[in-house]
Image (cartoon, rainbow, N blue to C red; front, side, top):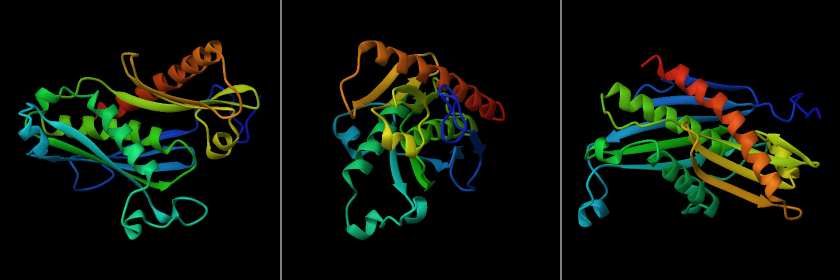
Length: 236
């Protein structure tokens, strides 16, 4: 089955990662997958959250903030700051990014530091959380390498999969995501271990066999993303 953009079901969109996209952060990238583009920046602070001090937790911390520019979609979206609070979707996504990226580092080796990962969506066409995780992990790795911090353990990336018109597909664009009978995001380490699987049946329940097929499809795509990340990190 050929998709609206000409891809085969098991084919990623056109992905690219541009390192050092911003001047000031410790690490930054522009990550593009199809028509989705996200700027990911890693900032290092020589302190940890107060709750870690209160609980006498050693090591460092990694957290994330996620947001979309008002013009990132076809219809302008009001800035959440103007509403005075973040949406539930935004909070969920930035918590997912933070959880995922903490798996990429040894927090003890990070030392008494906080790494803040900012993910700003400038164009959205589906898969923004997956792009944010994949780009955020790359920015985090760059920050650690440039600052000689031996905390980074392994790469982390994420990709979407789903069933559209009865066909399992990799890396859904917005149009496909909106029509999917099954919609899933898979976050994985470069050693092949799962961090998080977010899967939902939108039409009817799906089988274990379909789940396994989607996970295999996600792993196929993630291996390609890991190769892109490794190519970028060879520069540092």
